[in-house]
Structures are given as C-alpha cells and as structure tokens.
Image: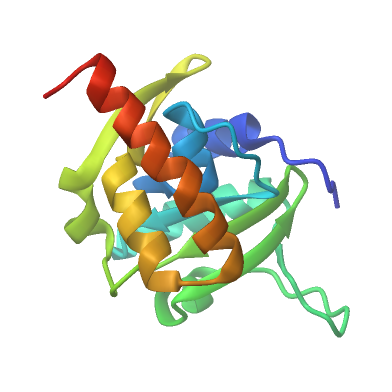
Length: 165
C-alpha cells in the first residue's frame, strides 16, 4: 500500500462512484487555507443503503484494507460499513479514515449545512467549514488537535478580518 497520501485521487474515486460524503479534519482545513499537513483524509459518509454500496465499490477500487496491527488483510464491505462507526483504512492512495460521525456524534445530516463546496481538480467536494472543524477538534481533545486549534483559530480570525460576514 502507498504511504504517500494522494487525497485528490481518493476524492476523484469517491466522486466518480457518486458517494455522498463530507471531507472533515486536516484536508478540509487545508482546502480553506490551513498551513498544517496531514497524513490521511477523513470523510463522513451518508449512511443510506445505496450510498454504503457506492462507498464499498469506491473503497474496492482504492484497494482499501483495514489498518490492522496484526497484519490481517480485511477489506471493508457493505456489512462492515453499515454496522461499524469508524473505518481506519490503508489504500493504494494512502490512509483514509471513513467515519459515521465526528465531534459530538455529528453525522452526515447534522453536518451537511455546515460545509462549503470546493473545486478540486475537475470535480466538486463538500468540506466542513472551519468553525465546525474547530468544534470537532475541541471535542476530540487529542494533543495534536489542541496544537492544530491554535493555527485554525488564527486562520478564522484572519479570514474574518479580510472578509467579514
């Protein structure tokens, strides 16, 4: 599996397979000007039966397998995607975390109105707005999230100074 993240290719495959998803986490922040880097792409998906089938097809195309310290090669399938809430995957394009919810148990329907649409290459994707990214990182409260919050809050302040809304 590739270790270098090619998030544009992950987004291309998801979009081509018509998966309904929201980019969350580091890549969502980068799309909005964050100078931070990330080693994975995190998405929240709509948990409908049809969308889970499309997601499973896309993950198959990406040769996804679960991150497993024991070294087993377990591929995500419709059953796992429908029943588990978190899928930490290695793919041919790098690490992809496929999540049912983020933050304080916020799912696709809770988040969709808290997104912005971005043009990435020849396609469009939804990504969490910076305020919601900050909220989810505050909830996670991991050391790396606390560090990133300093930069994200500064970015929001700079954007508001440039373009008050």
